[in-house]
Image (cartoon, rainbow, N blue to C red; front, side, top):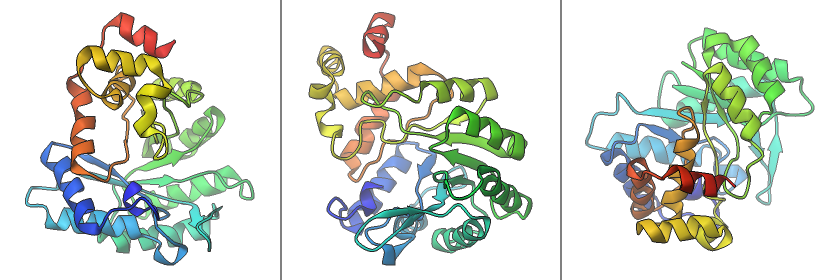
Length: 268
């Protein structure tokens, strides 16, 4: 997302280098959305960057899963809207297929519940897309426990993931993580480092993360991601990145082992 946010986005060449750095390091999941765009006139901006990066990478992309989302809209002035109608979701999926340059989307996620549309209708559209072969797996985002269970009933094994906000400053998604563990769904924390405006200050805003990072000689961001990975095997953080150095630092969390005492302190 940071690659497509007005005021934050780098040039496309740097974005492509960042994706290549992630792929070189073994990343196999890339998360995007049609609504990650600097303006309402450029819907699919981020998806097109991802498609360009994958096409220009020298390695084998067969095992790279690209997940995108539909159901959020962008309006003039940079604002956000919602449209969870089945017709809109079908149209959004078609646009994403074109932007990504694929015949079927590996993981298509309902971006956010639309209060004006019954949730079952929105999720029913994902089921139709699955049955039509437009998508190979379905996910939901910004869902509460009841909505996760409702989606699981409608989609059955087609539902594979839930993407909600979760970070040291936003911990209210613990119940959703528990439901995902119960139903064997992946939980993808968005803004795991606190978001674009807060990620750099993570260590000072949350002292325990900064102090434990100092003790290990690593960044507070790496400690944060290691803490999340230790929370449950179904938790897969998706930190936003727009520079090769930050994505490679994030990946260092895979090799950072925190003690039970450190984990308890971070979770306190």
